[in-house]
Length: 499
Ligand code: NAI
Ligand code: MG
Image (cartoon, rainbow, N blue to C red):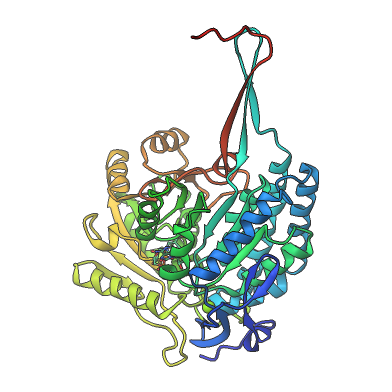
């Protein structure tokens, strides 16, 4: 298989991508760099500055200084909103260029990567309104007293982002924090830092004052950990693995930081025998395999009602075999590679585990285009999976589906809830009563009936169990990125007589 570089990607091959600190693109103080690969070829496409504790500290100081000078938080709400909307407009205008870079850095099909960039623009457009929303209230009080409380920005927000939706998540994590007046230091995933360099420049071009939005590149144990441990970063927002989320909470306990976490999942995708079959199969293929299964809400456990199982699984497998995996720059490609060799090893390890554990490999399991250097893998379906198997319990983050059966709503709920995660659940049914009954009992932050992954930016959600902490999106995000301040005033309510 031949994989071509997409247009725009070549522009990143010679330059070194630097940090964005205080409005300047700067290398690491140590001069250290790392390579970012194209996972479709395994080849390095750019050098990137590797941030150490001193670089993270410089970024936090720039962010803190911008916050203390109130260049952003003190700006008129309408002015902040206008700049946020302008960022959204610029992202839309440049979606082709940024999308090409994103595709080369992550292996996403080019059209998909570009669509994600366009979607990312909506985060700035929508959250711009938060700059102008009322954010406090007054409280009933004694005569002669006036009491109000309002939400205030934390100051510096540290955002740590993963590689599965790099540009989209960079906007998702920072736009709501910026809208309410915080400064931000963003640490992008080391596998996919390139598109964020565009964001750093574009934010300045839109008129955001220097130092409000800072980007530091590097890995987790050095760069991410320095941001988490920095005493001047009272708020953290993280998307990634549950293991790292736990570590962030542990370190944060030293300063009692406020931590927002969006972690792993093992989403049950439940098909009842009354479902619209065609829609259920199409939607289940989408949620199991889209983005090569690298979504925290991927529907990776297919629960099928026993009587419908054989015909549904047969059609599902037949269509899974036809999914086009390959060159992300080719127009018909549906799935690109996994992000890295580590992920490929991790995913093939789970496939091996599924075989050894007694599940039946119905399709897939192999690598695609071996020799091309990319991390391509076939959409894989295991049947005869039991809820206790590791492939039924753990997040694989690849195109690997575990099929199980159930007889009753009761049994479906029991299997669905029998994992440590509680992020999302998908239902396929035409019985509305059943949808409400199931939604009440499923342990998940968001439930989709006949519409997997439906999540417009104005709709809030929150991970349950080990899938997360804190509210995301919607007007709720305003509370997530502010803390409360209360002011009581005695303007004639009587004198204090004590001692
Ligand atoms: P990860 O959780 O290690 O990395 C995510 C981000 O956290 C990256 O920016 C990384 O540099 C940073 N990070 C890592 N260790 C850190 C630390 N000690 N302190 C601060 N920041 C740190 O995820 P990884 O290793 O890339 O993928 C492993 C698994 O995690 C995947 O197979 C998948 O199961 C899960 N994952 C879940 C995601 C989600 O959307 N919920 C996204 C990415 C991964
Ligand atoms: Mg890359």
